[in-house]
Image (tube, rainbow, N blue to C red; front, side, top):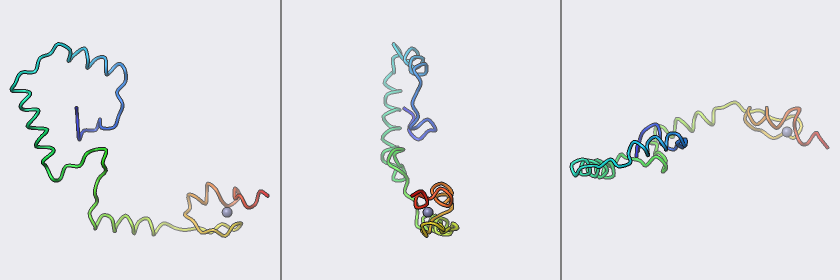
Amino acid sequence: MHLNSSKDGKKQSDHQKRTVREMMTGKERNNETIEKQKKSFRDRMNNPNYTHPSKGKKFNEDRLNKMSIQTSSRPKKQCPNCFIIMDERNYARYHGIKCKSMKI
Ligand SMILES: [Zn+2]
């Protein structure tokens, strides 16, 4: 279990699973190790700054404002065929010479 590591959310290959299983099978954890693992887990859960990897991150106000400015300041384009105003990526993909309203 590697919470907060770069392996979060990645699936292990069958080879990886088999290797780890062979390594850990029959291995006994002594009480000290178990207590250490429990303590580490409790500490992580009691930490107010901890975010679960699959629950998403909370951004602060400053960061959200910056992201908002960056998004809204992207250049816009208007399609000459259907006159919709959109960002450059959507224009390049669906409008201009590829616009639906032309292919009637
Ligand atoms: Zn269009």
